[in-house]
Image (cartoon, rainbow, N blue to C red):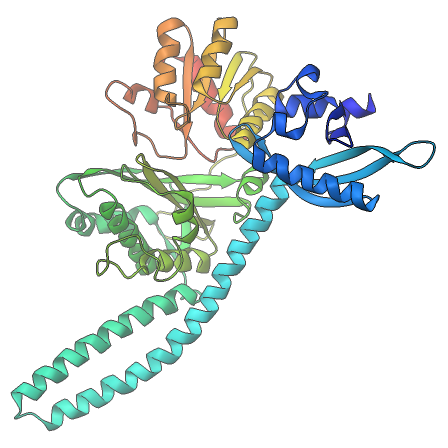
Amino acid sequence: MIMDHTPAIIYAKDIQGHYLFVNQKFKSFFELTTEEVIGNTDFDIFPAEIATAFRKNDQLVWESGKALEAEESAPYKDEIRHYLSVKFPILDAAGMAYAMCGISTDISEHKKQEEQLRRSQKMEAIGQLTGGIAHDFNNQLGVVLGYLDFINDSVEDDKKLQKWIGTATKAALRCTDLTRQLLSFSRTQANEKTVVDINSKLEELKNMLARSITPAIVIQYFLADDLWLTETDGGEFQDAILNLVINARDAMPNGGKLLIESSNKTIDSDCTHINSTATAGDYVQIMLSDTGMGMDKATQERIFEPFYTTKPKGEGTGLGMAMVYGFVKRYGGFFQIYSEVDVGTTMRLYLPRTLSEQENAVLPEKKGVIPSGSETVLIVDDEVDLLNLADTYLSALGYQTFLAENAQQAMAIMAKQPNIDVLFSDVVMPGGVNGYELAEQAIEKYPHIKVLLTSGFTSNTIAQNGQQRFTRQLLTKPYRKIELARALRKVIAKSV
């Protein structure tokens, strides 16, 4: 019972590497039966690269006769999980090793937090470096520009020389603009903050944004009527939005759709666990979603670095996103990116809510009671952490739940449980069937079922013809328990 109920993976192997014993966690995690493991080696079960790494550590135990502690990796569904493994020899009555025991503990979440901290420290170091260089370089540029002006005044009669001086002056001014952006990225102190109505600042930008995109791009606004106020610099905010819009435009060279939304968002401890850069509290959320080419994970990791750009040479400095990052951090907010290659990108800015008042200030939102229910809900999400989070939320509210990690699993569950009341599914999922398509298939086979979709993208971003009906109640990620509960009751109360 101890072996089978421990959260650790426990196993024993003989000298040749054949498995003698595995506990229940081992079998459930790797989705294997006892018969499929016992008597086999790692090379019969795992990819050769991983099996070789396991065998190498096993050999160290046999050779030393002592316990070994090491980090190991193993495949789990569509990802690689990381473990802290302790392996030690098992001795017979004569003191000879005849088997080896291993105990592996999942440290994947700890590794993720370490990676997030590493990225944060990396950005801080880059900020300090670029700030120092930009500050000194800016001073030298001031000297260059000053003396260029002196020279220009002294050669008024030499038009050719004045033309050369004018060209040099323009280049120096361009450099001062670049250093200004670098300083903006590295600056940690905010300008004097004022109470800002984000919606009014977005309204002021509409004409400029319309001129910044091509006619092939449709821009739509969805601004919350009851938006909270925030304390920031209105000009810097507008500069940040303009940079994001230009990036979105460049990601849609053949046209597309750009959505700009504002809303109120309360970040709780569950959301901060998923995103360690967030601090719990009330925020004004500004989202920009495009239907462009999207970004892979490597690009997302470097997107805020100064001078990093995916644009062709000569078409971008790589400082736009660095400026946005610096702005958000200075004013106590944080930033989230959700992107899928060939699908699009959602940029989400969070600025802290302020209770300071200004004329026509919005009253604080009243706290509501979290509605519960007893219906059966099928939850579909390929992100295991979010899948389990939604399950925890709904189970605590009284709902009966079933869990699936893709559309294929979801349809199989519905075939066995045709009386499921609600399908709650992510929109973007692997496997060739997205949330919209899953909803259509579910309703076709089970007309009674209600549908609630969720996505890191904003409403209407990737819905195809006929699928817009599912976006009316779309729940944006990250969501709180109360937001999920209310959205669920709304879809249960009426048909999709």
